[in-house]
Image (cartoon, helix red, strand yellow):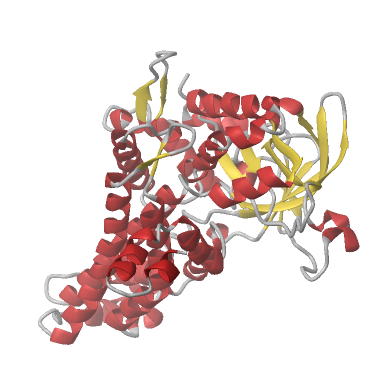
Length: 482
């Protein structure tokens, strides 16, 4: 059955070991560092049951007749993708802010595994069956699914075998029930998720055919031996009146320690074969990239809205320079929108029979969105002026002594001082807060580092058209086509 928010919250009370700021967390759902995002995720589950949003967030499965989450449905048509886009928009509307790791942006990596079944069948057909089972399970049960990717890495000039071998997660043994793994991974939201797809970081396999580091599996986040060691939270330390985004949408990053954790055979997707690991790494984001870039669009809407509201409130929209800067933010917003729209209109069939967003268009869109974001944020700083950094606190506006002066100097015409304070508090949180700086770094590295973004464009681009054009209008056709 379709989960409720209460179902999700209760699923976190499984005895998991979670640490933050030197303390062990007794209840993730109620701890002040995690509760804001746990409540957001619970709210998303509840939206699937409410009259105004159920039709966007859910569909009826053809085979089981069960009501299932739209975001977990393997895409086979353009309409499936349009429905997913509308569903994520409804999720972000319901959340009230930009939340990234809530499941829809990571479940697509399972579909990439589904596409790789031919490769995995060369190794062991059981692994292919495991993938099909878990793709279907995610479709029917909609667990909160994340994706553990980055290792602590250690000294990258050395092989892991030549230093502490645990710097990269690897298999240390087998049992009748499964494999035993040791090491660590970083993943946002793992401490309050149900499961994670754990896969290898890009490895220097050299000529190795088999490696204990080439392993991918599904892990229960409450399993024995798993420890969640979390970074300090921003949310618990900030007043919602001063930091409306930080206080509600801080998605906690976690180092997941696998301390000799047994992974059942039915949860193993590939094991030891470097060919399978390399294939998965190369195709990992072919689906998950879409909702990831969609978040850039929502963030751009925030930036554009604050830019226009700020300029209009101070009466400077008649200035050509101001209009040009607002237009630059609008162009960024529409550029992201264009890549998302075109990627579905030009969608491509996948090797596994699914429909994937147009790969060159989508990877180019990721590069566009991530590389231009810092400049767009700085343009908004310019438009807002220094008041973003000078705005007094709400307590000062409410105080009997200072408040009357702040209300006098921050009121503009019919726009009350409190509304301008709220606007600049939002701008500060978008641009200058701990949350803003963390988000900017996260967007740069969340799916992979910038060089991998460009490499993905190169590896998925069809150069035949440009080459044919050059060959047609030159005398070096043979050289161009080789």
